[in-house]
Length: 263
Ligand SMILES: [Zn+2]
Ligand SMILES: [Zn+2]
Image (cartoon, rainbow, N blue to C red; front, side, top):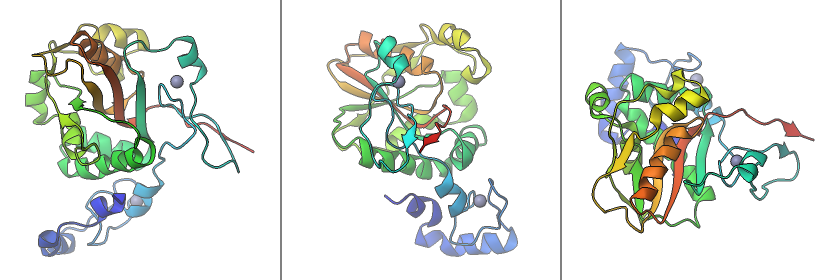
C-alpha cells in the first residue's frame, strides 16, 4: 500500500465534509506548519510524512537497529550487530522496526497515543505494511499479539494503540490472527521516564498469558515504539512461558540513533 494513499486520500464520502472543514477551519501540517490542502489529511503534509526516515538495509537481523550504510553499494544483506552477537536475546528471535522514532512518524505516534488522534493508526500501520512487504515476505506468523495496556491505563486512554495497529496489519500477514491473551497484570511506569536498569525492573513480571491460544504458535508481538526492548523482552518471556514456538517483535519505530553514511 502506498503510504500516501492512506494518509492523503480521505474516503470519497468524506471529501465534501473535509473541504468544508478546511475552508472554515484551515489545517496546518503539525511538523512544518505548511497549510494543508483539502486532499491531504488533517495532520501532516506529504513532504514531511515521506521524508520522515524509514529503516532500510543493512540492519541487524536480531535487534533491527540499522548499520552504517556504504554509499554506492545499494541494498545489502542484514547481519547481527556486535551487541547481539555478544549478548543474544534469549526470548525474542528478532525485532523489526519500520522507521526511526524521528520526524513526522514520531510526532504521529505521540499524537495517536497521547492526544487521541486515532485517524493516525492507518498511516502508521501503512508504514509498517510497506516495511513488511519489503523485508518480511519470507516470515510466517500465526498470531499477531499486541503489547497490552494495564486496564486502568486502557480506560484512561480509551484504546490500545498496539491493538489498533495489529488489527490493521491483518492484511499484511494473512496467515495470522490477532490474539489478546497476553495481559498486563500490574501497572507499570512510563518506560520513557526511566533509565535502562529501571526499565527492566519496571516491567519484570508485568505480563502473563491467559488460556492456551499461544501454545506452539509463531508469534509476532506488535508495539508502537521499541526503545531498549525491555517491554518486548518481558512480553516475549511470558509468551514463551505460555508455550510460544517463537516470538518476534514488530514496531512502527525504533528509538535508535541514525547511523552515518560511509563513502
Ligand atoms: Zn509538513
Ligand atoms: Zn543487534
